[in-house]
Amino acid sequence: MNSLNSMLLEGNVVRDPVLKETAKGTPVCTFSIASNRYYKQDDTLEKETSFFEVETWGKLAEACGKSCRKGRGVRVVGRMKQDRWTGTDGKNYSRVKIVGEHVEFKPVFSKNAEKEPQKNPETAAVEQESGIQTVPVF
Image (cartoon, rainbow, N blue to C red; front, side):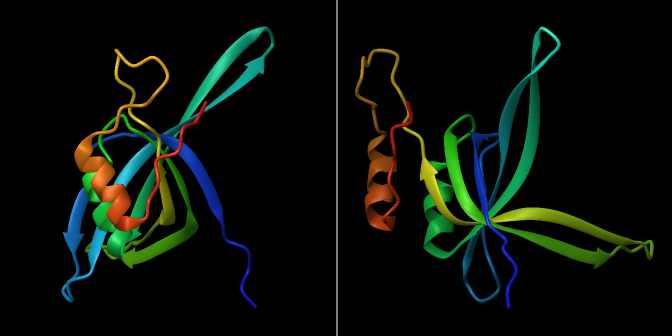
């Protein structure tokens, strides 16, 4: 029986994504997101920022490669995966990343827009083609 391994993560893209293909031609996209947590300690509001590596595959990877840009808000639903390897120095290493199975892009607002988010025409086409939706987050 599988153990529960499910993640819901919301934050902002730290840098533009890297879109590559495997040797068999499968698209894979990697990007990092920063997620903020606020908490109160004594009478001070504190901020804690965590950074997470996200990896997407297939059509979702293509959509993320086109729509994710530095600073854009995203919501990622996926699972955690641990990579393990032995380095050239003989030491064992490991890294945990998020494998995204669903990605929602927060709308990009124009400074001139009052209530309606402005979509980049390229982003709107990618979202329609891949079935990914931009959801307003208020």
